Image (tube, rainbow, N blue to C red; front, side, top):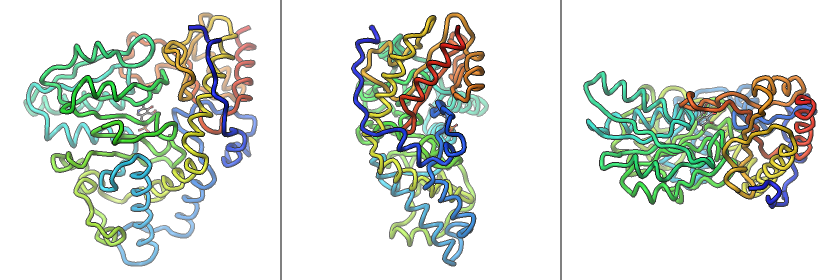
Length: 416
Ligand SMILES: Cc1ncc(COP(=O)(O)O)c(C=O)c1O
């Protein structure tokens, strides 16, 4: 399709106003940060959580009866409630991990080890992020060492960037137990149509959904998505580093093997919520929690709520359409599958492309020299062999049309 036929949505929120909440831009106002799929910058309210914890509240959670320890336990449970509300889950279905990668490993280990039998099959897409694929390869090797065989069956990406439904239908068999999916693709930036895939695979195949690139960009509703497991990281949604979320449907909890065993929080936590601690949480969490990072999830969710998730989605979609229009004026540009090829009226802020006349790495390096930060390379896709080397721009709430103009003009200069 012609990019001219894009119909951009008018932005409701103004990226510049949002930018004021991020101290990193105070010291570097000229920086264009276009690597948000990798990590987001942090608003002051999130930074304050870390400052407060380490300067005034430092203690371990749920292991003592003095006030700061009690408050630490309470703030973890508050974050659990906030996350549960944010993704429409029950609070007992939320466990904290070290990050999306950790959560995805927990699914493979915790569910896979105790539920897969000889000859069972897992479907996966080699073009997805390694963190969604390698845990299954690792489990396969562990099970082989125990004399058990599971099969990993690949399916492919369609030319427009979403999953190829036909190849999923072909990969499906009566031994399929789980399909690993991404909600929004980290290179192609399109919605991977999870509802359609649920219809194809039926109710008995488990879905492990990687929401790393959709969280904070669009609504992630575990009921509507009908995901059995859902994983994402705090640091990609404005919260601190070192915390991830694993959602697991309540009906699966009983059949999970403990992922990490060790010290647990004591009943001070249960007292805070009036409920006994869910079995699932104890199977996934143990040892000292990353208290400030977990607490920062509440601040990050509050920040997103203040702007409004629909407003962020509209703004980022508008930026994506503007980016396509502007980049299309550059000679030699080749767009990766994604918003351009699927004919979507906007996007989720991720756009990948390359130039016929130059290496992506060279372009990304030249842009970095001009303080414009993008990514180049294979972007952690599990299958490297046939992949193109793309430049990826990924935008969020604080990016502006000016950022896009600055980058486009820099690219024009670099390419000339
Ligand atoms: C789609 C996707 N899944 C998983 C991950 C892994 O996230 P983390 O490194 O926070 O564990 C990423 C990170 O870029 C990602 O883009």
